[in-house]
Image (cartoon, rainbow, N blue to C red; front, side, top):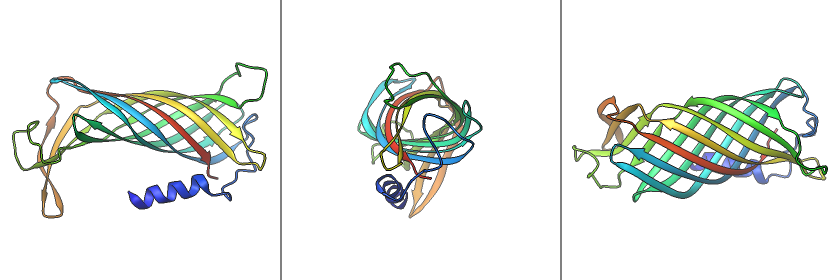
Length: 216
């Protein structure tokens, strides 16, 4: 995870990461990588209640193929970190989606607005940090859930005077937690202690704000 973060930060702040063959206001055919960092907040809900995840870190990448000036398809991943009732919540979204340009709300070129819709799967991990009040087995180190995710985003593409394409984006996602796995540690090796369907309805509502660049 540390190496991924370092690589992502290198891409974002590298002055050589240019996308000279792409113009935000007139999309052209081709594949590009977007990478960014930002803030993330979440509401975690299960049969015991609803918990505010507060403000945390968000890491995001999208591999986007621009079909023409009006459409693009993409594979994305987004990793959010939050504190939920003193537990660390690690939420990972793997998605596929579409991207379209949107009309500007002003007559000035302050950036090219766009919209995204996506679906996918979202493994979500809750680290118990030695607190076993949420589980029956004292050997459980963390709980992992898996389920579908659906969401959307509104963003704006910009270009600097030197030709660097960058973006800002707000995104929202809704996840259903369908499968639950309790995991313990046997030394340094994770071991599945129990695995089954989630009792009752559990879900995660998340909101993220990201700033990043077109890395290539």
